[in-house]
Amino acid sequence: MPKANTSSKRLGFGIFLGSVRDGLGESQYIFARRLAVSRSLIAVTETGTPPTETLITRLYEVFPEREIEITTAAQRWAKPHARNPRHLPRQKAIQAKIGALITSKKLREARDHLTHEIKSATNGDISYFVWLFEQLGRVEDLRNDRDASRTALAKGIQMAWLMPGHDNKPCFLVERLAISYMQDENYVHAHKLLDLRIANAYNPASAWYHKGIIHWDEGKLSNAYSALTTGLRYKDRRLDIQVARGHILAEWNHPEEAIADLNEALESPQLRLSVAVRVRSARAYAFFQRQKSPQHRPGGWREMVDLAITELEHAEADMAVSPWPYYFRGLCSKLHHDMLCASTREPKDDVSRAIINSRDNMHSDFGLAVKHGFPYLNRHTIRTMKDALTSSEANKLKLLQLQNKNGTID
Amino acid sequence: MIGPTDAYPPERHQQPYGRAFFLLGLRAVDALHDLCDVPNRSTQEWTQWLPSDTCALQGWFNIEEKADIAFSADDVSKKNAAQVDDLLFRYRVALPYDEAERHWLYDAYGAAWGPDSIQIIRNQEARVMSSGLQRVLLGRDLVRRWWAWRRETDEYSGQGSAAAARETLRKMIETLSPDLDLPEPYLALRLSCG
Image (cartoon, rainbow over all chains, first blue to last red; front, side, top):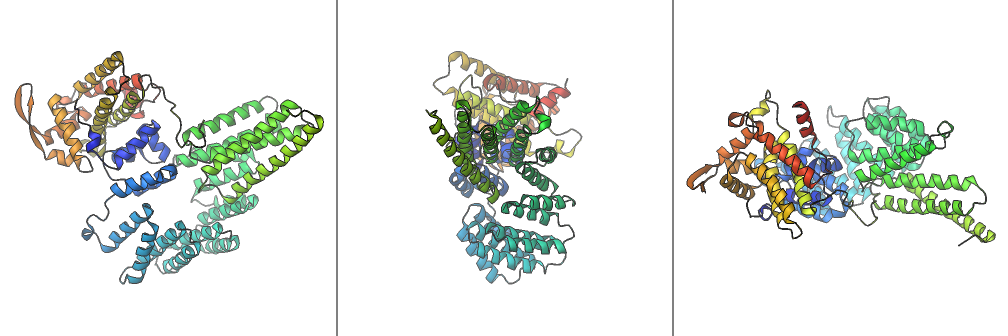
């Protein structure tokens, strides 16, 4: 067949995508699952169709370490939205341009465009201004200027209330504002906003979900559980709520209830791969906890531990850049460590070694969880890891003192 | 196990013929997927050129490209090369083009590569030498033939050539990348054919 090497002729995002896939040794189908997009999106992009914003966003999320390459490829070959802007209405052209700037992380330019447009646009409809403020809030948040982000969101909310028949938009922005307050640990403001939203909404499922997420960030697991359970009474966001509640129940040492929620979530065809990895990891931890339950102790505890380990290995193989398999494996090691420490006052050599091993495993897994943690880990999970590491250090000191006293140290 | 500094999973796949041939097998998985993902005859889509037709066409070019790279690798033994060459030969003769057409289309697609590639090829014509004769190739005819061949209709009805291409791709996958899963549409098609 032809000696000509087409790769020298074909240049584009599809070629970049193909090379990423080759590096992983994955078919389009498996790669699409990794990115939680459809296989046809990968296949079509590889035929030279410019990448969609969703695809670029997913690539950023899944391959954060290749951010520069993705940005470069996206800038060179992304959808030519504004190639011929005179054929588009002005607003659409500006929206496309700002969207492209945000996707390619040119945040300062995006902010300048947005502020200029807010000042200069004269005949846009209200929804256009709401969009501008919403995007400005997003850009300022990405630039870590949360005060500016909240100011923009608040203006967007004020305008959104003026839009007739569009109750969803202000509600969505209120929830965004609440999350922004949560990020700065201003929980009182965050809850006040959501309470107001719940009082005025026909379907407050999403607000209850966010209340649950905020309580969780605070470390108030029982309140988080209550809020999420209330949210389940409504039809919206059932899957998100179930995933969050199952995760919380697993961390709250309620393995049976956690497994029930997580099993149901896993049955959903809408579950994205990254969320499925989280769900399977949380379920593995719930399996691991079952070894303590009397009904599983007689013959099945070993089976539960093996099941948890296998499940975590599968989750890690599915998505190595997710923090959750490492986080929950670290929690399993902590549980194991605590059980060993509690089992005897003066541990023998082999038990001492097992305690030290579980502590070391916990250290290394939490290290990996932190490495892949942004933006998934919340304050509660970070506190949990910190507390676990501190308590294991204290136990290690006690152990060393004991071993010194007994003269058994190596 | 993933190391803390390793962003990618380690190679987990068997590569009996080496990395370059493994990638050829990998592309064969994608090509086989698109060859089997054909619209239902009773739907409107049956009559149209679909994105999956373009993907299937690209699947063939990807195989050619990876084959070219794999054969130029230093570490390929003569015996292995001959075996893969035989598979490629069987695959190519099942395609709806002769050698001159394949060469021309491969080059034309490379030059036109992008969202409008098929439209560009449709509008092209070329004079080539084939079987000792001068002849004219019409891009629109080659595109139509790919459409008909993939659907096993018109002159390709009852010829079994698309099925032969699919089976050769399966053999290629099983030889070069033995632990990659065969695509679901292929398994479904095989099940439906008994």
